[in-house]
Length: 332
View 1 (cartoon, one colour):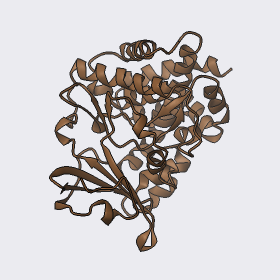
View 2: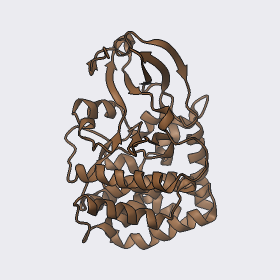
View 3: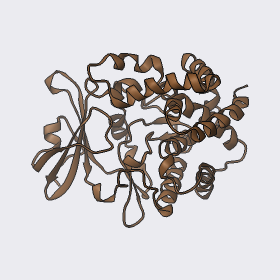
View 4: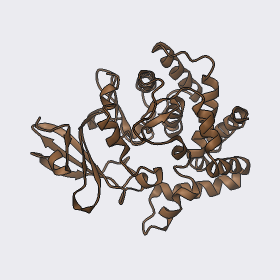
């Protein structure tokens, strides 16, 4: 394939492409552009991101293209063989007066989890969890010298102050409107949790510091079913690693648990247990820190997504709220 790993423009990235056509995936939430194309007989997928049009980049604070930094640092090439990140090449294109990131990937649409709310197969779920643990174990103790997503940003991704500018847009993105409605609903149905989360949004420093006292790893940040798949040989497909950085591995796992709750074939507790077993199988000692990181990461996850739980069924919100109450002792 005549595609260099590092080129300067998106057009160079797609040089020689045929059958080039725009697509929109059903799970896509951002303002990114997507194309399917063929290069030298190889079916590829091209994603183009621009902070001016991508609200996700704005609310997460991704002003300098974290994925490109991961690529240039060679971190994707260190992923374990059980994970296919699908990336062929990238280009940070500064032509035309703006900075756009082009990501050229293998077209793995045939291996992705189908959209919808159906529960995934147990072996698929188990593979996702154990392969996540393997990725985290391979980067155990990793420190961010690249300049990726800070933990404080993660706690404030959807907080009212962060999303306020997006609410004034002519067309408010669906997730932004939902977050706004969810925070307001949470204040009415669970004022205690709402007040606690509000305090974290105003001052995330204590929680960030507490999390930093437990082991960290490289997380990719968005293990939702729309970004996941399973190859025939059992490898996990992981696309759209949009929020990479140094963080607790359990935060990555709880993102998966929180966003995929309707599709998991086993309980949250069983999923957490399988992840712990995966770490231990990869040689990571989990005694002495796991429970504390779990509790603090549950708090962190609710700082990010309590609004989403407020819009769902009451049992789901009750589970997370109860876990937060138990975990608050870890902050004392």
